[in-house]
Image (cartoon, rainbow, N blue to C red; front, top):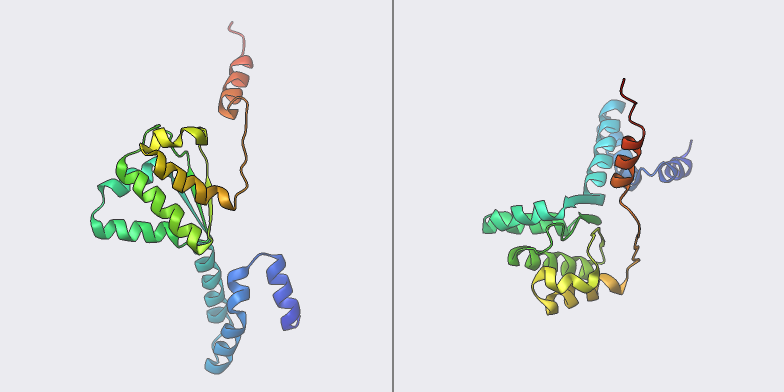
Length: 179
């Protein structure tokens, strides 16, 4: 395989970290006359680093509670960790319905900063957006957050029973008869 074919194969395999640094790593290896395994190991590390920075999953209520208890320096670091990835997933937002003032402020900061940087955000919630003002305790803040989220979004709304309830009902229906 030549370089063009290798780069095409890396794209097809979705190895963007290796694809991004391949030329640099090849030149470094040639200049230092590094053994193949060292160069290959460095390329795999590039891929791992890239993947660790493409996406971040957060259980919203848990992470926001952690933020509220953190020191100022820890809060700064948490916010940086939540803004920097290409994609962040906030799962089960408003699970406990009302969130603290600190949580509302950090949610607004995350959404605002990610919006400016054009970074993706996925939010899952069982709460309708019309009620977000109640859950945040501030209708204006809810409008600000929703304005940025809805500007360039794809909103998916699911109706019906929870898959967990369906699975539980199926398990109950299949229970063996007692002797």
